[in-house]
Image 1 (cartoon, helix red, strand yellow):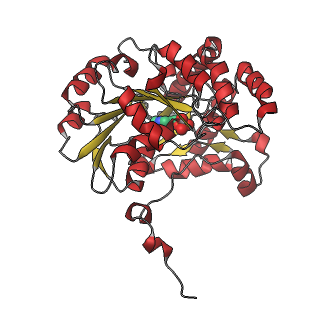
Image 2 (cartoon, protein in one colour):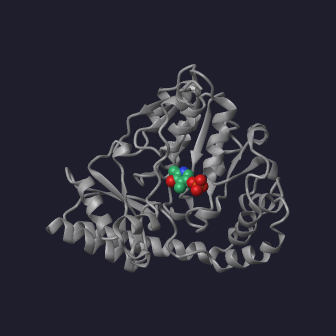
Image 3 (cartoon, rainbow, N blue to C red):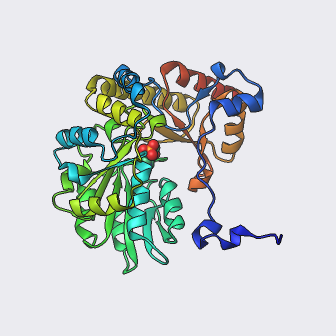
Length: 370
Ligand SMILES: *Cc1c(COP(=O)(O)O)cnc(C)c1O
C-alpha cells in the first residue's frame, strides 16, 4: 500500500496545531524521577488544594447506582439551580464539559476560514487553539502591564473580527480589569462582534471595582460569560462549567454541543456544590493566606512577582526560569513554565496549602542559593 501523509490531508488549522500543554501529572513525574508520588507536590494547574467538598462526594456516591443511564442531556437541575443563583433564565445557560467546552462552541458557531479572533498577549492558550482548529486567525493585542489593554482591543476590531476573548482575571498573569474598563470596552465593541468574557477565577476576586459579567448580559446580547466548577468549586477532574448569554446565542451553542457532554456525576456534584458557600469561602480564605505567604516568600528571595487576584501567581527569575523549573521537578515540586505565553523569564505557581507553599519556597530557596 502507498504511504499516505495524513497530516497533509488534515484540515489546514490542524496541520500546524500543537496540542495544549497541561501541567505535569504527579504520577508521570514519579515515574521519571523515581520519586514517591506521596512526596510530590503539584502546584501547576490552578487546582483547589482543599480536596472536593463533602457535599460533592456525597452527591456523587448517591448517583453511582444510576451509571447505566445516560445523563440528563439538558442538565435541567443544574441549569435551574444556576438560573436561581445568577438571576438569569435557564434558556440563557449552556453547560460544558469544563468551561473550555463553551469556548469551543462559540468558536464553532462563528469562526471559519479567514475569520479573525482577538486575544490579549499572555492570555489563556486555549483561545488560540480552538480558533486555529476552526480555521480562524488569532490576532494578539499587546498587553499593558501584563494585563488586557481593553481600549486597544476595542480599537483592533476589523470587519473580519468575529469574537474577542477577554479573561478576567487572566491566567497566567493574574491581572484583572475594572468595572469602568469593562463597561467602556463593551460600549465600544460593535454589537455584531461576540465578546467572550472568561471568568474562571471569578469566585476568588473580592475587589470592589471588579465586575461580574452577568450584570451586563441584559444590555449586551453579544456577551457570553463563562465560569467553571474546576477552580474554587474544586471539581477539575469532573469537567463541568457553563456559559451564560442571550437566549439567541445559547440556542446557537446548543446546536453544536455534543449530546450528553456533561456526565451525571458531574451534574450531581455541581448541583450539590453550587450553594456550598462555606466550601467556597474556605477555598478563598486559604487562597488569600497562600497568596500572602508566597508574596512575602518571593520578597525575601528578592524575586519580583506580578500582583494576582487568582489562585496562582507569576514570579520572575530572569535568565534562569527554565533551569529553576527543572530543578524544582527534580525535588518533586511541579509548577508551570510560561515561556509559551511570551513570558520566558517567569514561572507560574498555583496557590497550595500552607505546607505545600512552604515546601515550594524552601525548594526554590535552595535552588537559588546553589
Ligand atoms: C482553568 C481555566 C478555565 C477552566 O477550564 P475548565 O475547562 O472549566 O476546567 C477556563 N479559562 C481559564 C482562563 C482557565 O485558567
